[in-house]
Length: 451
Image 1 (cartoon, rainbow, N blue to C red):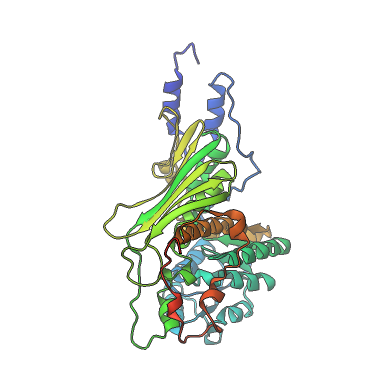
Image 2: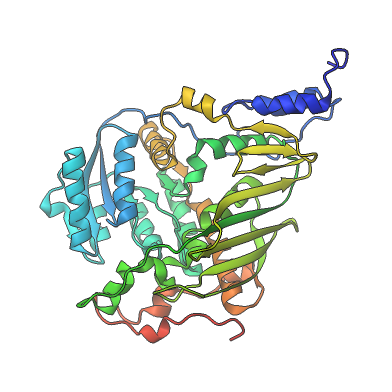
C-alpha cells in the first residue's frame, strides 16, 4: 500500500464509506497501521448482538396481555402486532376503564382483534388477573413505580415479559428487579426491556465497532436529553388525589422516578452498555424552574465517576424555549463516537467509520427500534432461547437514581450506599393500600438541596 502512495490520512478518509452492517473497518485499520492491531474491549460472543430481521419467525399462536393502556401501552401492543404474525391479544388491564376501552377499540378498528369483556380487568390488581388469564407473554407499561412487583408476579407465573423503561424508581425496586431477573434466567424466560437503542440498527452497529476497539479504551463521555416540557394533566373536577397523580404520572416523582430516570435513562444506559462500566459515585445539581404540575425537577446535571476512575457527564432538561439535544458521545484513547452524526472519528478528527443509512435501507425494510425490540422478544420465545435484559436496565436505572438523589440532597452519593438504601417510594408516599382516593399531598414536595 505504501508503494501506491496511499497515506494513512487518505485511507482513513476512504474508510468512512464502510457500510451499516460492516465490521471490516477495525480489521482493515489493523492491517494498514504497521502491525498496531486493535485490542477489542470485548470479543465476539462476549456481548449480545441481537438478530434484527424485518419480521419475527412464525410459529404457534402466542397469547399476550397488556397491562397499562396509556399512550406507551397502546403503542407497544401495536408494535408487537407489527413485529410478528400469529399474536393474539387476549387480555387487557388498567386502573382506568376509559384508557382500557381506548386500546380495546383501537385493536378492533385497526387490527380486527376483539378482547372479550371478561378478559378486560380494571383496578390496581388488574395485572394479576391479566397474568392469571392464560397469557404466554405480557407487556408491562404502567407508571414505572409498579414495574418491579408486576415483573415479579409474571416471572413467578412463568410468563415472558416486556418491561417498558424505567423498570425501577428506587433502591427497593432495583433490588427486586435484580432478584426477579435471576429467577427469569433460571426459568428460561425471554425478558426484553424498552431501552430500544439496544435494538436500533445504528446503535448496534456502532457498538460492534466500539467493542472491536476502534476508539480504543473508553476514557469518558457525555450523554444528553434536553427538550421542551413534556405533557401534563391539570386536575379535573371529580378526580381524587390518586386519580390525578396517576393520570399526570410523568410529573410526580413517586410514580415516574423523575425524568432523569423516566426519560434520561436511555442515554445513561447507552454509555453503561457500550463501556461495560457502572458508576461508583455521582455528584449533581438540579432544580425546578417552570414545571406546571407534580413535584419533579426541570433539569439535572450529573458527574458520574465510573469503576475505573473515568468520568461521564449526564445532563437532562425539560424546559420550553431552550435548545434541544438528545444524544450520546463517547471518547476513547484512539477516537470518539457521536450518535448525532453516527460517526467514529480518530484523534485527528478524521471519520474512520460511519453508519451507512442508505445501505441499511436497501438491506432492511423495518428500522423502527420500538418494533424491532418485539421482533427480538418473539424470536427468543419461539426459538426457546432464554434472554434477559432486565439486569442491565436495572443497573442503568440505579445510575439515574444516584444522579437524582445527588441533586435532591446536594451530596455526593455512592453506588454502595444507594443500592443498600431503604428508600421505597410506595411506602414513603402512600400510607395505606392502593386505591383511587385521597393522598397526603404534603409529602409531594419539591426537594431542596442541603436539607
